[in-house]
Amino acid sequence: MLCVLKPDAYDIRISMSFSKYQFFFLGFLNLCLIKHLAQSQNHTLIFSKDNHFRNCSCSVDIQSCDYNLANLMCNCKNINPPKNKTSYNGDLTIWFSDTSTLGKLVNFTFVHNLKLSLCGASTLPTEYLAILGLRFLRVQAESIQEQSLTITQCNAKDRLCQVPTEPPFHISYLDTSLFNGLPLLKSYSVKNVSSIKEQFPNLPYSSWISATNKSYIVTLIY
Ligand SMILES: *[C@@H]1O[C@H](CO)[C@@H](O)[C@H](O)[C@H]1NC(C)=O
Ligand SMILES: *[C@@H]1O[C@H](CO)[C@@H](O)[C@H](O)[C@H]1NC(C)=O
Ligand SMILES: *[C@@H]1O[C@H](CO)[C@@H](O)[C@H](O)[C@H]1NC(C)=O
Ligand SMILES: *[C@@H]1O[C@H](CO)[C@@H](O)[C@H](O)[C@H]1NC(C)=O
Ligand SMILES: *[C@@H]1O[C@H](CO)[C@@H](O)[C@H](O)[C@H]1NC(C)=O
Ligand SMILES: *[C@@H]1O[C@H](CO)[C@@H](O)[C@H](O)[C@H]1NC(C)=O
Image (cartoon, rainbow, N blue to C red; front, side, top):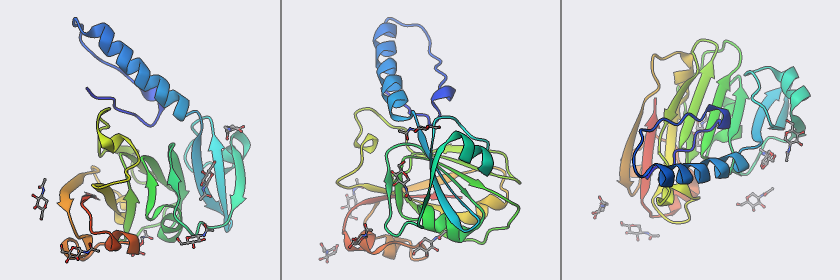
């Protein structure tokens, strides 16, 4: 039985056909929804503006790249560019205008539901951004309509639902040039990868990833 967690609590649409399992099923879905609503009351929004990084806690969705509205509607504070990588339990939104900012904010970060918005009209080079534990991604830019991609559907019994403390670890690589405008966001996963360094020599990895000798699921997003 699937409990698909969509990032936007307002956007949950349930379609199902009637069956004798309906009540059981509904009860289960309610549990999923309640759990998700409780978790996603506020989402984190981080952006950089005038050389400051702002970390906001927002209870409503803010139109991408509307910095003034975010400062007004959300609870924001200045932060230093994060040195150590963070892990996010809730939804994370990043507004960025260059790959270096994007890298500082999300490279090798652990997050399930991520939305990336490119602000401004810059063209991005091909660089790889590594995201850990990613399940649902939305991307948006001036030149591309918002697109979304479900990478893992979270099966309630599945360990992929929880923060993984043991293998397989899930690492997604996103090609930053996709923000320059692509018809469709796609992904490709390779399971049972024992060495990212050897099997994907062109992709970046962090020292802790190469240090563990474990099993990875590697997803390429392009
Ligand atoms: C942003 O704030 C949230 C709490 O609202 C915190 O969990 C997270 O670590 C912060 N991120 C950074 C990069 O400071
Ligand atoms: C949630 O966001 C609202 C503004 O959108 C803010 O006033 C409130 O402090 C936030 N709550 C938490 C727990 O950060
Ligand atoms: C960052 O991580 C390093 C090693 O993992 C640790 O020694 C250091 O104290 C951490 N710094 C902060 C600010 O958490
Ligand atoms: C992410 O980190 C890797 C390794 O440090 C680096 O090679 C890559 O360019 C970074 N990606 C971005 C978008 O900053
Ligand atoms: C994973 O790879 C190892 C060694 O490459 C192999 O022995 C094992 O059977 C593989 N497991 C699965 C589930 O494919
Ligand atoms: C990692 O695996 C290789 C071969 O699969 C083995 O030779 C090596 O000792 C392992 N390293 C650790 C730290 O377990």
